[in-house]
Image 1 (spheres, rainbow, N blue to C red):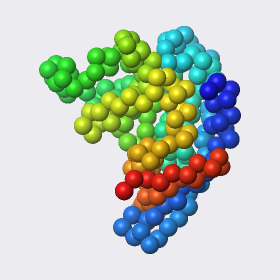
Image 2: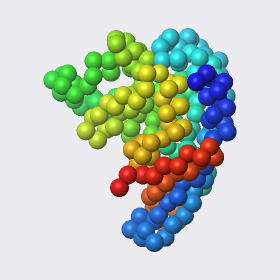
Image 3: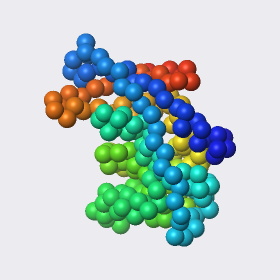
Length: 206
């Protein structure tokens, strides 16, 4: 998919999550979602020429995926480069207590030279891109539960494109972090299924 095509796909993609209330599944609600695109900004320095980063950020400033306007929840955030340092510091906070032996055992070789380009909002999980070695340009998701580094795509365009058409495991992962919590009552909701304006329909795993 070309970047202009990806831009249109993100801008035009909308849909709904059908949800049940946690602990009270007889109560249901529908949550609307859309994606928010930030405009590109001038860079102080060139971006590494891996994973389609320069082309992506010439088209997008950042992307917030599957945002619910009422709760503010979102599934993924591809951050502007100006925010990478803050994300990098937060990611490294999960690793700073590891001994040298633990780092060698747990962390992949490329992690010392990766870019932290985004996150799953409010989760402590991050989106990483390797910049060196055989995996240069590949996109990984870091899940702090168990220190998992899960390879998701060969470049950033492929990663975002995949999120626009999630399969059941991906939607289940999204549901585990998007609970649409009511600020007054604390009520939480579980996504049962997603339906979008392209006819894509997928259910979470049970």
